[in-house]
Structure formats: C-alpha cells, structure tokens
Image 1 (cartoon, rainbow, N blue to C red):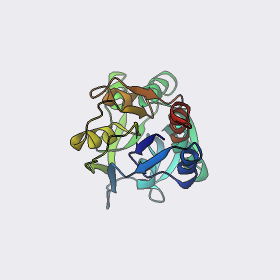
Image 2 (image 1 turned 90 degrees about the vertical axis):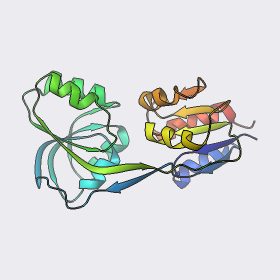
Image 3 (image 1 turned 180 degrees about the horizontal axis):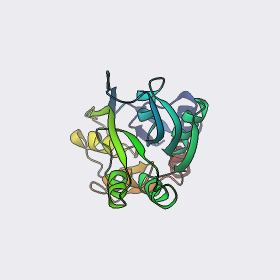
Image 4 (image 1 turned 60 degrees about the vertical axis):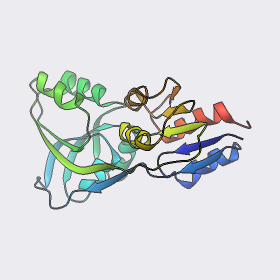
Length: 216
C-alpha cells in the first residue's frame, strides 16, 4: 500500500477519496497564513485583482468590490458565493494579466496579494502602463517539519509548500504531485519526478494520485 504526504490538511471529502483508493495518507500544514490587521486601504474598489482564496478572506467584509479579476476556480467560487461580480478569470496570474492588458487596459486596478506573490502580474501591468495599486493583505510563513519516513508521493499546493518541505526533507525517489505549473517549477529544483494536475484544483491533484497508486 502506498503512503503519501499532503502538505496541507485536506477537507474530509478529499481525504476520503484517497482512503477509498486504498492509499495511506499523512497530512500537515507546510505553511501558515497570517492576515494583516488595520490595513490602510479603501472601503470601495472598482476593479480588484484577487489571485488566491487567502487574499479574498483577508479583505472580505472590509472592502466593497464592484468587479473582480480572479485566478483559480476555487477563488472565483468564493467570490460568487459572496455575490461579487467576476469580470475575468484565469488559471494562472500571467494569463490573467494578459487578459487585463488585452481587454481592460483603460481601467484602474487594486491588486490584493500576499508577501510571497509572484512578479508576473505587477510586471506585465507596468510594462503595459496599466494603473494599479498593490496592497499586501496577508503573510505566508513556512512551517518546516522533519519526517523520518520516505513517502511514495508528496502533494504540493504552492511554491511555498515545496520550500517548507525541502528545508528538512529530501524528495529523492518521491513523486512530487503539484497543483500547477508555478508549484512544479519550484519542485523541479529538487526532483525530476513530477506530476502536475490537469486543472489547478485539489480534487484534480488527488485524481492524479489515485491514478498512480490505486490499490498498490
């Protein structure tokens, strides 16, 4: 029976998908999220760029958003549940920035992000002379933990999760299951054994694990 490690605590239904496939799973939170308090930001925003669920949770009920430009299905779902209009959605930050440049170059934006945000969005917007304000609304800190056993696979959900894991562990012969290309690019610094989800969702990542290890 294969044993995998999830670098974040899964929801019960996600956990069950692995158990039902006869896969052992160990889980922990490789990173911690800290929301900033007493932020200096407007109470109303015309065009908000939101690239993660954490960015939205940090400003939820604090900022009224007219329309949002979003990365990821799960983030979009969160905003829809809050009855916020979504103007554009993409799977990756670079794709979203390209869409903004092509279709919304005349608008002003407010980019809500974390301390470890990637450079694609601000760089592309600046290169195309699109006006935006950036506000860091949460901080990601690493939570490294040493594991004595070697796992058949490790599930990674962000580049920070990879960085945290490799501080005290090696991937060696372990397969790194990565939620997307940006996470995979970080994992590639440590292993060639990488499988990337077809869609950047936890559920699809689990599908890849089940395909590889079901009933081993």
